[in-house]
Length: 96
Image (cartoon, rainbow, N blue to C red; front, side, top):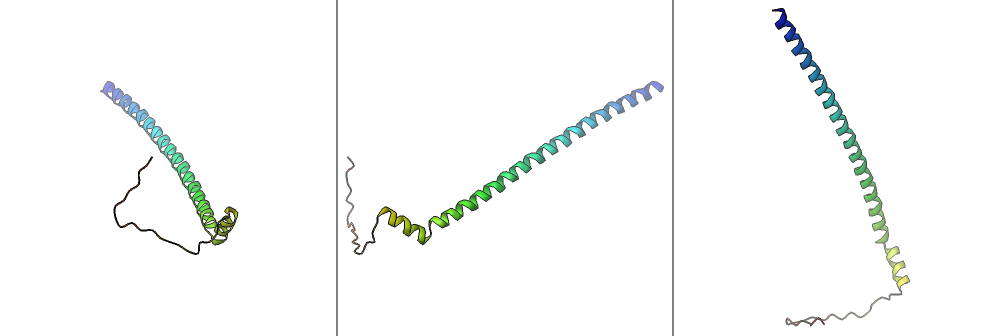
């Protein structure tokens, strides 16, 4: 009886150490996942900031003042007479 009680105590101690090891491993894995999630959240925030900056730049470049300035810099002029050419058939051109 004493021998079986000793074996039971030994088995419980081994099980206790194993459970402690699993608990430490689980806490470590959860903490690592938390750090990874935080890093990804920071990257998302940086991406959103960059997207906002680029959207503002697009809006600025599409503004009338910006387009007018670039038109003048390129030396373009306004067209007054527009002639449209339409094709009635299915003519094609040869690529050489």
